[in-house]
Length: 580
Image (cartoon, rainbow, N blue to C red):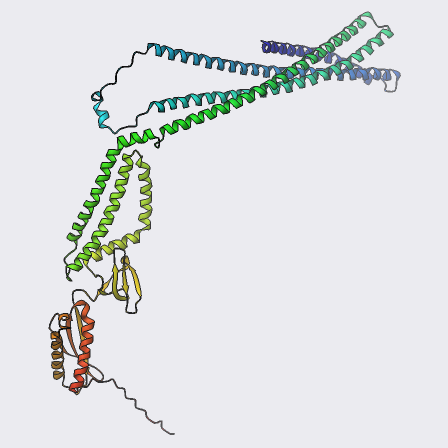
């Protein structure tokens, strides 16, 4: 009620200032008219005359009085504006206090209604019925995937979080309201100080104006002015005295009001500290309740772990057993598939078994990767994890790998075809591109060759476009024997075939020769020899030993038979230079 009374008082003071301003405005009009008339008379007479000097003496105090009245009117207008602003701020403060009061009343009534409702519900609640048997549960629930059931602790924790969060929000709202009220109060203090300063300036101005009016009245008395003029001057003096008295009372009352506002600001500041502290405690309680609820909701909570193990554990175990069974099935299936794809080897069952094993291992690795990936996704889904995000990430990763591993996939596919077609195997003498060597290692990714100088060459299978295998199935030792032109070539050919047949009967080299030697006959005429050509078919890896042994025996027999192996000769004829 005191705030309402203060508002009415401020509105009354504002109206009084407005009336005072209007009166001063009328007085300024009268003084302005008188001052204009006197200045007009001064302009009409000579400037150096005595009458002009007397008029100037009369105009000067009129101008000073006009300035004082104008200043007084400006101060009155300023005071009215300050009073209007102060009234507005006071209305704002009253509205804020009313809002806080209504909120507190609304909160208390809501809590009372909630308590009353709980009591009524407790009073009207019937006795707890016995739990329904499990057979009465809907079939759809039994068929659907088990959902996590909330415990009483989880429900209570969630309600506590909601309650604490609501209390924290109310506490924060109270802090905001206290800040706004404090700001409004500070603005009221600033306006009260401005109003006191304005009243003090108005009082000084009124004192100065009063002194002039009293001096003018004294001059009128001494000059024997008319009674009507004296009464008018006396009324103006009394009016100024009343104005000064009102200003003095206003300054005193506003000073007291300013002290009260300072006390209210001090009290409000202390209350604000308590409210801020309470809001901080409410936030801490809400955060503690949220952590407690999060712990009850956490998958690591013992109850949730137990529930998860009971509801999802059996299906996960069945799935794991299925994955293990798929591993065993994939091992058998890939082995059978490899045997079906690999054709019988020309070099025996051992070579075919190696190729089957290599392809089966490759197929098995790919099958295991697929089983692990699909099984992991199914296990994650069964465990309650949303696999849509995982599938999105896997798609992006697969796309990146597809672009980055094109050459790698080409190497593996080429390696698979090499093994499937039995192009070469370990120990074969092959030529790949410009590299010739023994195959030391061949897998789905690379082929490793070691040349005659012992250097190792790693060749990606995707770069192999042509393979020359000198150890595939069988080999052929080709001999080009040069004899002198004067030798009997028929005799030489018979001798060479006898040596070849003897060697085929040899216990050490005979098993390595798989067919009768083939004489081709005279193949070429060289510069100094006749070239006789014949061939011997050998096992793939025995061509070089057979060839070296055969050349050794030919050399020894030719020496015994006196057959000349010509040596290339070059004759240089040098003619002497002609003397001139």
